Length: 200
Image (cartoon, rainbow, N blue to C red; front, side):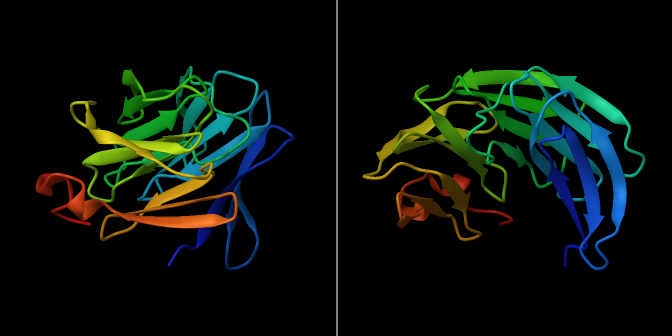
């Protein structure tokens, strides 16, 4: 059960709070612009942040607040689902405003980047819990990508509504919402078997 939460603020700070007591445990971590996202790594050892109006995604040590790395990714300021940690906490994916997925390994340096299917208003990403593929949305469409080869998997999935949030369930259902609609797409019948097997 989670005991801490990381928050970002329009005053350019990020903080960590106790969910049990409301006490501030860490911070403020000072940025130059509005912090529009703050996300713990799965083991809680790292915190990724992203700022609006500035090309910056940062990774901090959650124990001593030291800045480990900063890399130049400008995110879509209108939404906040553009950061995704792999379950091992060693890979961080970030979706930029121009439709690129950026991959950082072990919070040290940017490893690679690749362009998604549509650069028109990219909105969010969701990583499968087994880490084999990632979904990215733009406007009313979603594409799936191999996290190792960075190649697109299958065809683009088109929706009748704009996508504002997205998640992949533990049994590999793709859940999207937007324009008052929630849609479930069963990926087990859509993807090759090795993408939907192993630890979920």
